[in-house]
Length: 289
Image (cartoon, rainbow, N blue to C red; front, side, top):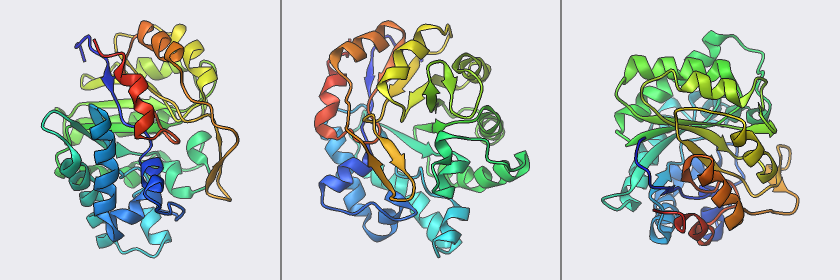
């Protein structure tokens, strides 16, 4: 991505859905509504588009065949929900809105907060098989880009990037990691190592941090040099309680000072993750050049 502008990303899809009075507390999270009420998902996406988002992320993060089977879904149900995820976003998008198909980590389907820890204790083959069919289906829906997000683990990202390169070598994507402490990604290894890995792949458009607290973002970005633009979309500073399936703690949102710092350090896509609604992304629109 060589465009000098700053692009506004959307916020938390689940946050926008909860604002409609919908419950997002099942194991398949927002994915459940892609079967039962896809119109509500489109409306949630549209609320971010109307607020000015340049890029919207689909609701496919939690969807997987393994997770679906755990929840009593058939594989056909999962396939339909995956296809609906891109369709729901497309119906909400304007002509110049980019639709990013969300690809969550292996840990997402475990529903135990593993995306904030990594180190799943499974073989590379298991991780590859987990992502393979889902990735193929999402590519068939023809999103504009892929969003590999909330990634805790370098090995998993390497597997995913190799899969994308083999299936759709021209598809652009970004990779965003969860950061547990300044400079360190959640599953081990440094953010500098993460950037070095991603920039080895020609179609990577950005690398960055999402669903992580504000305190770690600026210190992490400030000590890394990469040829790629950064993408930043923090959560609202709360902690995920996997037993309660809820965010707990007092929210802390980004300020203009945070956004200014990220842009100064090379962020070119900025938005919010869990806890950020349509009204919150005005902060990111102010940085357009």
